[in-house]
Image (cartoon, rainbow, N blue to C red):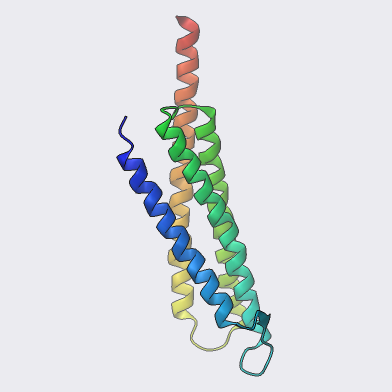
Length: 160
């Protein structure tokens, strides 16, 4: 089996991981001075829950990327219809739900505690939650399909 499509997907996953990592680093350097959080009049304490939500959401995001790499390795090994693939898809689904939770908490924080124009941030939160919900639904659907295929395979193995 050719590994070109999975290599392309791995490259895309690495690029996404590097972009999110760069965003994490730039967010940290923007809001700190010499590695310490700046608590002066310019930077208020209300800004730091946003940083906590972002880093908290980055954890399940990177866990989902690791599971996606595992799934690509399973595909390369030609063991797609195995319990390992089902487990990886289930973990991706759970990570997507956790990311939706973090985005929802961040949207609630923006809606309740921040002053000024919130429409753009709220729209970005809603769009991101929708895309993540689509990913979670697709992973759940693939998980169910793979589970059914494994059950059919086991049933056919018993009849032969």
